[in-house]
Length: 268
Image 1: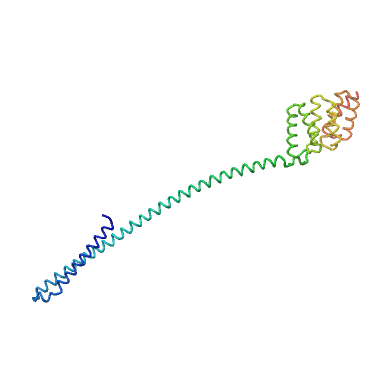
Image 2: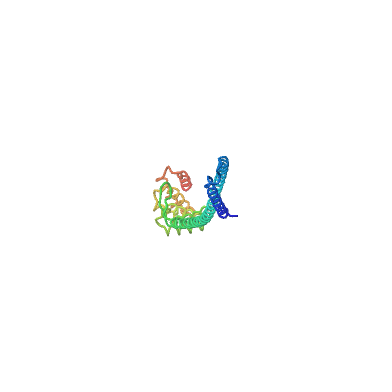
């Protein structure tokens, strides 16, 4: 039986009891006429009061039960509404979680794309953006292209591939005649040509170096190399002149002793 049916039956029972009480009251009303004897009247009155008391107690109990049933029914409706609200909230939370997951994935994808984009931009900038390098104790600005070209040529030189190194260094000097790397590229070009025994090319390279960088820290070494190339071609007079100039201009250089020894051998 449902709460609604219980409440309906309860209310019907209350109505019937109320009718019974009303009937009792009607019976009690003509009591003076029916009972003349005081003792009988007293017994009837006691019986009437007892019935009234019992009826009132029954009514109170039924009223209490009705209130409890109504509360239970209200609570049941409240639980139903609560369950419906909870279910709606669960669906909303699930929807929000799905949206959050999509947003998180979109954000991660966007971040990856931005990272790739900025890395690409950074790489492009690095390819064209000049940089500063220190050469023989001074800072010079060089472009990315000339830096890459010089590095490749110097790697060939360090590996002992003098043919390739000389070719790349000569090409570098033609392409970047005013490069900050010039003091190195022209010097090592002369050494590379000497390494591959192209003494005339080495003399030409060292001569250009001395004309362009007369005050370079590498100038004494370049002069000694120039003298050695002349000696390799048996150009003793030219070698002696270079060695004498070296000792005159750079008497305290690291290669001065070597120049003295070579010059002494040439004079003997």
